[in-house]
Image (cartoon, rainbow, N blue to C red; front, side, top):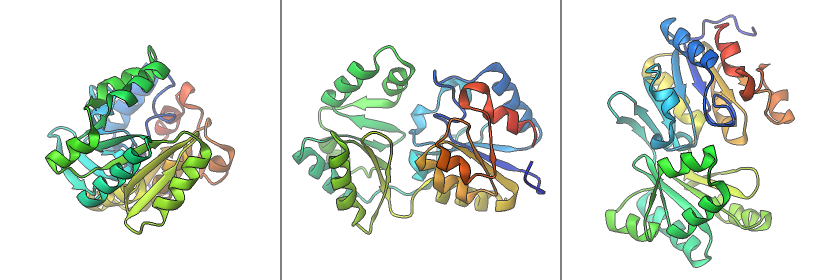
Length: 275
């Protein structure tokens, strides 16, 4: 164990990290989470999902007081549902981005109020691709289908926590990344395939993680974070101990303080039991 400091807070990415590929956790991992909480360790889901997307297999355990969602745009106290921190994209910019995507007929989701707003056409695409899978179940439980997300946001004057773009090709993603990356008010993350995530500038998993630690009076050296993907890089940099999953990319694992077993084999739990 590469730390001489007592771990008091642990940030846990969900997909590809804490969750198995079927979006569940094993009894072994459940027990490890419960045991860690009983030892006084603060357990924090840190995810790109909206609040409504945190699975019941985690929330029913009652071991997490806070969750960082939509890639750091919100910190929520789970027992009360109260947001203790929020950093959405400003309203004018939210609408401008959505208009740009609508004009080009590019599929997207806009997240606000703990769920994703999605058009019937985009939901139909997801249903076709993910029907009968754990991912499909997650999408169904965490999205709200509206005729026009843009009109919904304009009508309610909503600001997006995050805008998730499904590009039609790697080249289209590259073009959009260049366009939105030049906007000083936006932060972007390029994921595998042709996905692009937009949040407010200075908003990512790491910034929210550091803010929560400050709120709770916990020093960086007393924290650890588990991750497996590009959007976890700010999170693991913000923690005192960086644990990469065994299923992560090789370059991601090379920079880690330690490498856990895979998400399919209780990687988080095996390390958590050592804290």
